[in-house]
Amino acid sequence: ERKVFCFIMLPCFLVLFLLFIIPMFKPYAIGEDGFRYGDGIPLGMLRLDGVASITSGALMLTNSDPQRSGRAFSRRSFGYITSFSTTFVFLIIPPDSKDGVSAHGLAFALSSTVGFVFDAHPGPYLGLTNMKSRGNGTNQLFAVELDTIKNPQFSYIDENHVGIDVNSMVSINSHTAGYYASNGMFSPLKLASGQPMQVWVDYDGTSHNLSVSLAPYLEHKPQRPLLSSTVNLTSVLANNSFYVGFSSSTGLLKSRHYIIGWSFNTTGKAQPLNYTSLSQVIEDVRPKPQTRSHIP
Ligand SMILES: [Ca+2]
Image (cartoon, rainbow, N blue to C red; front, side, top):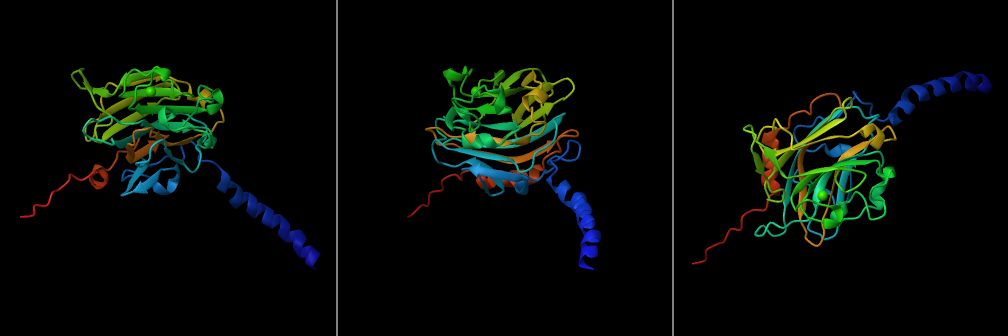
């Protein structure tokens, strides 16, 4: 009787396994999902490592330790890359607000692997590559860097630039940080000013056009992007799946790098952020002005 029971029930268990268990391991398919969190950082979706932590509702990528990296990437991978649209608000607090010198910056990144976290170096590598791996196609890495150090070794244009990086921290395209106003004039912005700013990155999977815009917090997305490049991300992210997130590092200078809010979409424009919530987070993480008590 027991044998008959097994004979009937085993195929049933197998069918149940195929129906329910296997789909749990399926990566996010494009068109199925994105991060649509307008209120801040999608905390549960992120895997933090290095010195990254969540504080006051913000993602703090680096704390006040020198020569350290912090990263936050999506726990689950997305499928084959087609198009994407993302926007985020960041805040860099330099170690000494008087001279505004800061290190090293942060990057928004897509990668087919998160294995690099074990070998990536801080400082100018922004926690994404190292001396040996830089430029390797096996990195399967795309990044938009917000770089606050001039490093002649990497052909950096200045100590305050935005760059498009493919498998390397030597940018394929870069521009002094700032934005084009509606009258066409370029307005420079200091990345490590202690002021929040917003970034938009849009990628068209058909034309392979990638554009990056930057603006002061609460300003509209500029009509003219700061940077545009043609990048075939299908060939960069060759594993046909990718993780998305942020990385940052300090050097001898110990800056704090924050992501305040983020939205990422693979099926249309990035969802707008909730600025009311973000303004509160910004207020909470910013250093408070020193108040002196007057003792008569
Ligand atoms: Ca750079």
